[in-house]
Every structure is written in C-alpha cells, then in structure tokens.
Amino acid sequence: MGKKYIRYPAVFLDRDGTLIYNKNYLSSPDQVKLYSYAAESLNKLKNAGFKVIVVTNQSGVARGMFTLEDLNKVHEKFLSLLKKAGTTVEGIYFCPHLDEDKCECRKPKTGMAVQGAKDFNINLKKSYVVGDSIRDYLLGYNIGGKGILVLTGHGKKQQKEISHEMVQPFAICKDLKQAVNLIIKDAKKC
Ligand SMILES: [Zn+2]
Image (cartoon, rainbow, N blue to C red; front, side):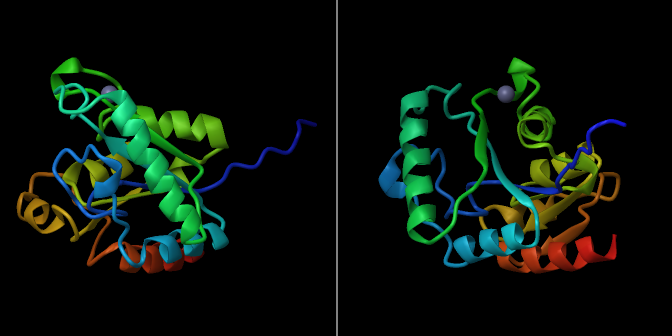
C-alpha cells in the first residue's frame, strides 16, 4: 500500500486589481494598498481548506520599469500588510517576462500554477483562479480548473473584450469578496 497522499484545492489569485488597488507598473512599496475585503476573503478561503497562492505577471521587470529588488520590496510590503490584517498567503509567484520571451510562466500559461502545485501538493483540477484580466480566467481554464473574472481593477474593460469565440469565464464577479463566496459554494457541490 502506498502512503496516503492528500492533494489540496487551491485558489490562485492575481495581485494588482484583485487583492490590491491597481497602479500601472506598480514599483514602490508605498503604492501598495489592499482592498478592504482582501484579508477577510483570504481567511475565508483558508478556513474552507484552500491553499491560497498569488500569481502575478510583472512584465515591468522585462520592460525595465522596475528591478527584481523593487518587486521584492513591494512583496515584502504586501505581505506585511496582510500580516497586519491577520492573514497570509502560501506563496507569491511572479513572471518577469514579456509575451515575446515565450516563457512558460506568463499568464495564461500555466508555469506558476504548476510550480505552486508541486510546492504545495495541489490538485489543479479542483482549483480556481481569480483575477481582473482575461489572462487570469484563461489560466483557470488552462490548468483544468475554473477561472473567475472580477470587475475591479481592469475587470470591466476586460469583460468588454471577451468575444463569443473565446473561452468564457466560469463566472464574473463584482469583486474578490463575491468570488470567494461563489467558490466556497461551488466547491461544496463537487
Ligand atoms: Zn514568464
């Protein structure tokens, strides 16, 4: 008999426009501001048994708008704000590339989620991706899970760009708070 091996469901969350207010090419720690419902939403997911992981495209690095060091400082601030608000995340994965770099990590490519799945024993098919970009919900689809578009950040603009020929989101939610309630309900059905 093999060892019993548990794989967890996860919610992969976008950073900008989903957990924190959107700023184009956010590069400095003092620009980091959590949405009021961010911490509470993360705790709800964790209490429901989800691993919570941030996956963020940061092409500003490849574009030379900020350095990896700047990005680290932003993430330190982000984590300290979460801690102050009484929560945390399992990890933050970022892609510093451009589309033309043809990396495996830039959303909607699955590299970051696949790495997260290895690091935290995650069942991707039982997982969700939430974000304010088409790339986010497509990532949910690409990992065999479910993708939710939120209408904060760039969400409303992105929603208008979804055409009939495209893969559709599993759901469209006003914000992360609403998305979390939907995920918890949906996961109970499965
Ligand atoms: Zn990449």
